[in-house]
Image (cartoon, rainbow, N blue to C red):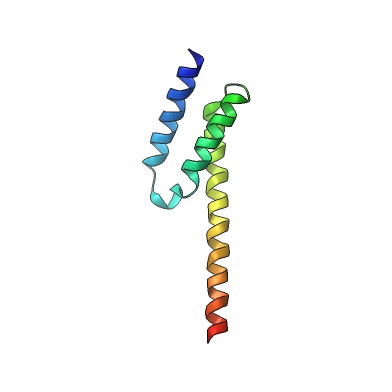
Length: 80
């Protein structure tokens, strides 16, 4: 019964995250899925894990985007 509740909770969190804006969604869904599973395994804290995973996933995606933008900017400056 607890597994069914955890799965339902995770699906609820994911559906809420999908309905958020696309700008915040990058990295969030993957992080929420991983965090939800990890939270469930670590003591039936799937919702907290999904929320934290979303935040971390979004943060990492933004870091990756900024690094790519800086690299593209550096390439453009070198080609001129």
